[in-house]
Image (cartoon, rainbow, N blue to C red; front, top):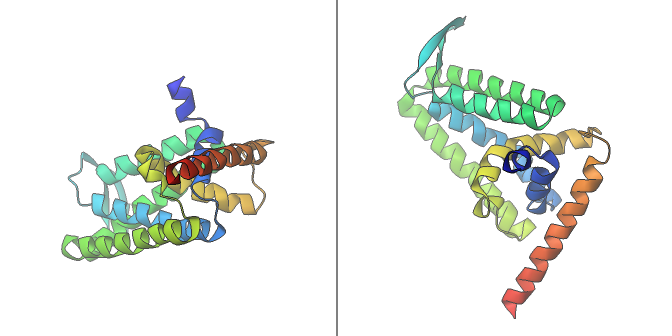
Length: 197
């Protein structure tokens, strides 16, 4: 049952959507979630490799299978298990981020890369907290479900973007998610009112 809930796209997306209903907050997340993933991979590129792939990229040597690879692989597999079509696109983006972060890591070297990562992470997180505090007026999802917030966020902003071009994982998905989001937001509002009394 717990396993099914973990891969229940509708349930997971409704959880995420309940914290991201303001259009400006959604836009902020769309712009800044994937850079957070990319810069995390950039930092993980400096972890020791488990082994090297014999595949060579121009000026980047072999591709090491290190924590950056494991991180990208876990995200990619999880997304494909959630939804084959959109998940496959998300998996491709994860691996492009992995390859791109490897190339950038080699170009920058650790002494500069960690500073770039720190600046990018601070910048992106600041905007996300502004999105929640100023526009959404609700604490981020990571305060209630750290796993869901970190693992699922890149996939959900991709699904939000695909929704604009009419993609729906299955008929009725968006209607079901919308109903669950509305129920969650009403429950949250009621809880908020009780606390203020």
